[in-house]
Image 1: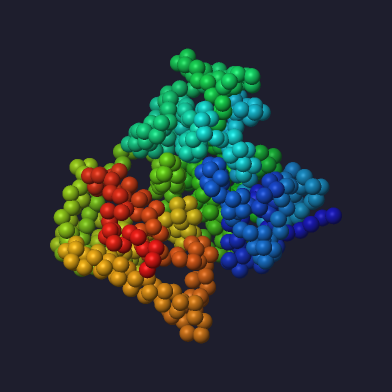
Image 2: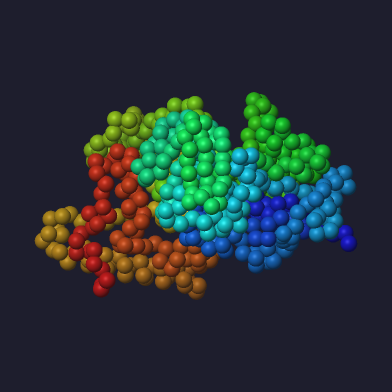
Length: 548
C-alpha cells in the first residue's frame, strides 16, 4: 500500500524534531512524517555524555517533546524504521518496513555516526563508542569508582567523557594524538587551561600520542592494553573512543544528491536546499559551501541543528529566510561551562578589550575602585560618548548590561541579540543543564547596623519573602491580571513547569549552587584573591532560617 506525506523527514533526531515543530509554528498545515531507525522518541544528544552517564538524568528528560506533542500536532512518527532508497525523480521512498511513501518535500536529517578506529572495533566488549541513547545507557552501566578508563581522543566529546567518568570515580587517562587538547577548534590558551584543570583533578593526559597497538585479553586483571607511539603500554578496564563523527550521507549519494568529498556532508545552501529541487538536508549530515570563499562547513552542534532546521522550515513554508545568528557552541567539563562564539580557530590569538561607561548618559564612571589582573584590559570610554552609540556605530563589538541599549530597542539594523530569535530556548537549555538562574539583585546592609541590630537581616529577609509571596499570588489571578500581558498566567505556569514552584528563590541555601559557581569563576579569572565561601556573604543571623 502506498502512503503519501507533504513532508518526509528522514531521521528523527534534534534537527528533525525541531524542523517538525517549526513547521507547525509557522502555520504549515500539510502532513509531516518522521522516519527514524532508533526506537526512542527524538532526543537531545548533549546530555548523553554528561547527565545520562552520571545517572542524574532520566531517559524521558532527554526527549525533545513528549509523545502527546506529536499526536496533538498531527506529526506521524515511524520509529525503528529506516529509508532504504530514495527516488528523487518520482519523489518516493522505500522503507525497511516494506512501505513506500511518496512526498512533496523530503528532508535528510540523517545525522552522523561515531568514527570507528580499526584497532579499537566496536565489536570489542571493552571498546565503547558514544553516539546514541542506547550507547550512553550501556556505558553508564559500566562506569564505577576505581574503573581504569582509557579515553582515546582529546576533542570535545573525549573531554566530556573523561570528565564524566572521573566524576563517577573512575581512574581516567586521556590519549590525544595532537600536541594539545582541542587542537582543531580552540586557541592554545584554552587548551593549556584545560590541560592544567584536568591534571589538577587527577586525570592523566598523554598528548602527541596515538595508539599503535591494542590488545584485549578478557582473563587479564585489566583486559585492555594499549601501546602508544612512544612505546608506553597503558593497561585499563575499558577503552572509550571519541575519534570524531562521520556524516550519514550514503543515502543521499546513492540517490544522486551532491555530497562533498572533503567533508562527506550533503551539500546545501543557506536554507538547506540540496542539488535536487524539493530535497533538503539539515544537521550533522549537511555541509554548506560559502559561495565567496569556497570554505566548507559541516558543523556538529546543538545550535547548528536547530538553526538549519529553522531555515529549512521557512523554505518549505514559503517564508523569507530568518536572519542567521552568530555561530555558538558550548561544552561542560569538570564543573565548568565553556562557550564559544563564532567559528573557532586554533591559530588565532584571542584578545578581549573591555570598555565601560554610561549606556545612554555620557560621563558615567565606575562607582567603586576595582583591582583587575594584568591580563584584563579595561578602559573608560570618552566622557562625551555612550555605549549605545558606540555599539550602533560598530566601535565596540558587543555589550553586556542590565538594560537593553536604545539602539537595540529601536531596531538599529546592525545590532541584534547575540543568540538571535532563539535566545529563550538557549536560556532554557542553559538552566536545564546547569540549574543556574542568574541572580538579579542582592540586598546589602551596613555592618555597623547589623552589629547594633542583629535582628535586622532576618526581619528584612522576612519582609522580602512576604512581598514575593503576595506578588506571585497575584500572577495566578485570572480575573485581574497583575501584568498587562494577555498570556501572563500561561507564562507563569510555563516557568514553574521548567524551574519549579519557587522559580525566583531567595536566601543562601536556595541559591548556594549559583553563588558558588559565581565565586569560583570570579576567583579563577583573577577577580578575587581568594575563593570566597557563600556563607561569608551573608549575615550570621540569617544563616539559620529554618524557623521564620
